Image (cartoon, rainbow, N blue to C red; front, side, top):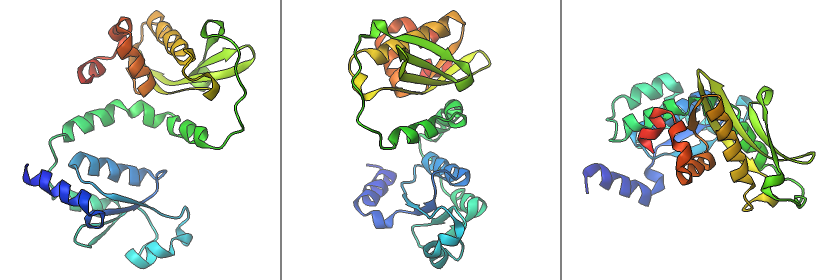
Length: 236
């Protein structure tokens, strides 16, 4: 095992030795620091802070600031804000996967710029017990709703699924797919994926399957692999 591998094993064994990032998921500065830590192969603990600065008494006491991000390094030193944090991180060496992570970061630009995270968070919210859905996938209609940047799967007057996308420059990036819980495992998701990909073919669009469901569907159906954007053919 390499020295770097031994270092990682020790860090996993004792989380207290890991760097700690005081941050919030919605904060773009925190997101940038997380990406650089990933590219450097640095495992870290993400500490969520209160949403408003005047509520962050613990962070203020620990670091002398109520602003994020703040990085506490393994040696206990504090780095406040992206400039200080990046200056500190530049002293480290990137790991072997740094370039590939940077490439995937670039590939997922459409997902970051879309509302995929917002849709996923919305999906996480508690909902009432789902109504059962009668019917088969062949009865469902797939409709492109460009003003919402998504394909909708409809059964009668009910929307039972969606495939969100971002389209530009002759390319369509699928960022998120979901179907009604009562429809899962019944082929409705495949009906949605196939119709969306067929529509992309008709329009001559390259496909970036950022959504894991669409990516797995393409893997299982080779007839769609020719639609993939070159960068996604290489890495898959």
